[in-house]
Image (cartoon, rainbow, N blue to C red; front, side):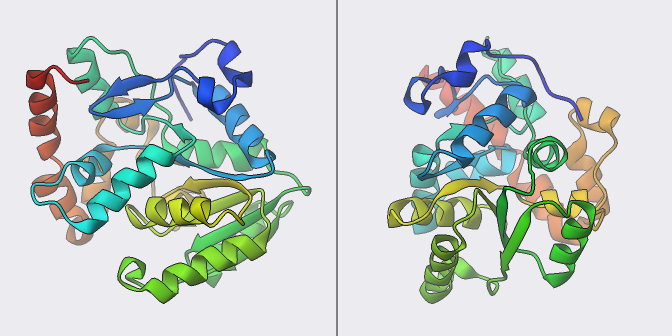
Amino acid sequence: MTSDIGASSDQLTMPAEDLVTIPFLGIQMAPLNLQQAIHRVANLAHAGNFSYVVTPNVDHFVTLYPDISEPRNDLFREAYDAAALTLCDSRVVRALARFAGISLTVVPGSDLTAALFQHELTSADRVAIVGGDTGLLTDISRLYPSPDYVQHVPPMGVLNNPEAMADIVTFVEDANANYVLFAIGAPQSEIIAHQCLKSGKCRGVGLCIGASLEFITSAKKRAPVWIQKAGMEWAFRLLSEPSRLWRRYLVEGPRIFKIFIDHNGSGKN
């Protein structure tokens, strides 16, 4: 598990509104390394109110800047703007930032999730999981039995199902968890985390974690570290699940370069 050294130790204890961030492609990202991110997430988990963390990757930027705008894109943007902590999850994005003279640290969401389980979660914590199946819960609780777990498995297509979205918010309200793991993919996870924030009745910190739990339980295989460091994890995932991911990585993903050129040409970060 690797990350990049970034912010000073002063960043660890700063209130969220005072956290120094770096703008790139219209997103304010925190220059934290993995250790600093764990510390800040743990503070959010015990703050008494609800907040959530987002980890933008190439797919997220493509969704944030669609060719044709849809209501869900606007909701995704609103969710990003309301996040308490934004951590860059893409070495491709970091490389583009370097072309613009901007230095970003990378804290992949999967690394952050794994580190929380390995080093932070204890028997005093309650973890609410949104998504997955009963097998996932069995596997993660076998590997890390200390936390108290609760789970809600929503139907597919929750963004087109207002009742299902409301059920998730109610579950999070009732769970009273320190950590809420949204494992239903983007932009669903981020949009529903924002709904939880707006409800005013949730607590803890939400993490929009994608396939992180499946990597931890080995239900899915993650790229070796050397492939991750080379910025080629996307290629490994494409080869692992070509029928599901070919469009994301071969059709939609390359739009990141146009997005970068458009922002660079306009003088925006």
